[in-house]
Image 1 (cartoon, rainbow, N blue to C red):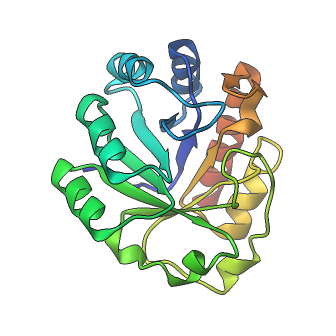
Image 2: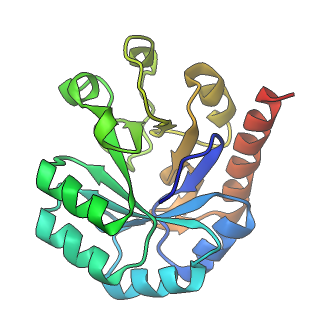
Image 3: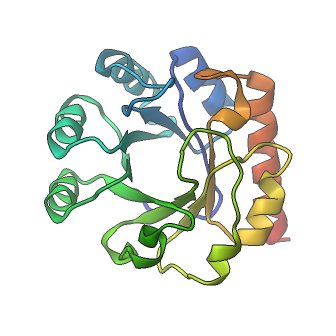
Length: 211
C-alpha cells in the first residue's frame, strides 16, 4: 500500500490521457480521476484507459464525493488505482472494504466544518484539507490548522496555484498539495504551462525545507 512521502504533488481532475501524460512529464507524484458529479467527471471506460496507460508512472487516485458504497466499490472493481479519496460520508463498512482492497485512503475534510474537528484520522492514511466546494478554485482560511493537529499526513487543497503553493506549504507544513482548477484553461482541460509551473513551485518549496 502507498505511504505518503513528504512532497506529494497531485494534479486532480485529469480527463484525458494527453493531460495525464503532461502532468506526469511535469514531475507530479500523482493524478486524480473524478467519479463524482463534476465538470471533470470521468466515465469508467475513460478512467480505465488512463489508468492502464499510466500504471507505474504515477500514483492514481479515484475521487468520490457523496457516492454510495456500491457505486464506489463497483468502480474500484474495474479501475486500477493506488489511492481512494473520499469527500462526504465514510462509514465503517466502506472503510473495511477499502482496506481489503489494499488501497490507501484519503479523507477530505472541509475547513471550518464539524467534520474537520471531529473526524478520527487514525482510520485513514492521509487527510485532505479543502473548502466546502472541492474543485471550485476558491481559496480558504488555513487558520484552523493551528487549532487542530493531525496524526497522519495532511494534503492541502482549495484555491492552490503556482503563485501561492509555496507560501501555503510554508504556512501549513502540509505533506502534500493538490490542485485542479488552479492549472486549467477551462474545467477539465489542463494548461500545460500552469501544470509545470505549479509542480516546479511545489518541488522547489519542498526542496528548500531540507537545505
